[in-house]
Image (cartoon, rainbow, N blue to C red; front, top):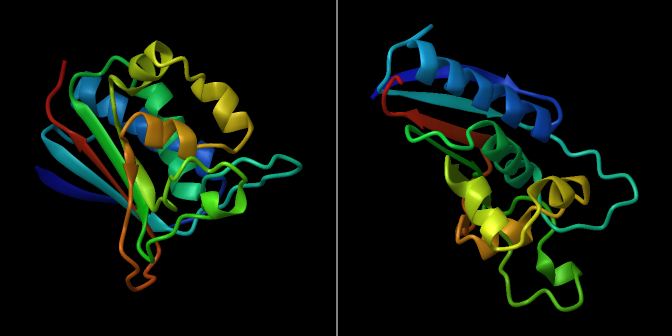
Length: 165
């Protein structure tokens, strides 16, 4: 894989950033531009989630990756992962009554089948994103990342694009 640092110091709403990176990945997959696959796109930074009145469980990397899953739906060549290097990506289920034994996630991994798997499991990704409730879908789909506490060196996303179509 040819490595590409797509962005350092990425800032902004996590869900929108996920959509942008996924759109770039889809463009590369379909056109081979601006770089030919196989390639690995990297971003780092500190994204944010504007929660408002919603009380869902998740975090910025989980929202980034769950939003991205909708853009790469159906792809056979793209896998995306995003995680917070300090091991925790926002509030965990310890803040929710009946957290179903889900640990505090550090991020998630998705591919072109994630949206279909969610649909088959009765999970509406759009609704969960509106609720800022990314942990439950990722954990239910076995796409959540659990990280041991480590150094805090920002959020990191990795997008692998295997081939052009």
